[in-house]
Length: 297
Ligand SMILES: [Fe+2]
Ligand SMILES: [Fe+2]
Image 1 (tube, rainbow, N blue to C red):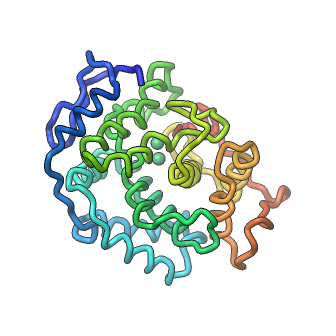
Image 2: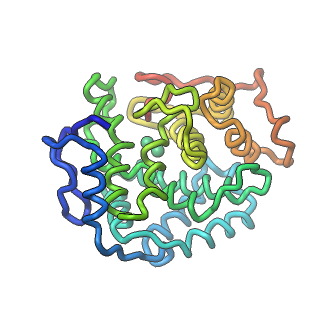
């Protein structure tokens, strides 16, 4: 991995996982895994996250995409019964308090990716319970990025940008601690969600990306576009966001099938996926922003 961190990385349960002086490598990650002895799992339905997810379904921006009610109920039923380590819920509670935008974003990623996993039209056959857990942990590393970077109104400096881009790696390390020996089932959600199929993503410029991470990447970009951010006050309209995603799929950066599935949720008729197009004429304008089109990344 060959990198060092800008500040010591502590887990939410108070362990110092990595010091700034330490080189992050496999030996160090193995040590972190070995030091995780007992994990106590908690049912999501018994935490505040469950009620927050219920509320997130009412998000107006997703009104067209989160129906019918029957599917929502199915998603909620799955959500209610999954278990995750209590440390992850502690991270989510802290994110909720310190970074409400990121918290809402995380919940929406979990909802939308579970909806895709339940979609019988998908050829990839994702497991809904796995997707849901991955959605909830994908941005866990953001919690260690200073708020003055995340909420900055002006263009990020080169160093700040570099720091922001450490969040997939930080999340990857945290998940080694929280999941112990089970880490490889979930850690790539954080590590690979900013990778792009043409190798232009980060942190590793991968071209072969875990298919679950590919799913998360699409949903992640959609939510970033539909949100108003300090550096881009006006969010994309649904139409211009879909247009952007189609462009990314065409350039072989994002998973084409997932893009089409998402777009289909905003359509009344359940058209065959390959026929879905966004009208060139009625396309929305791209709102102004300062650091690139989707500066979330
Ligand atoms: Fe991210
Ligand atoms: Fe994200």
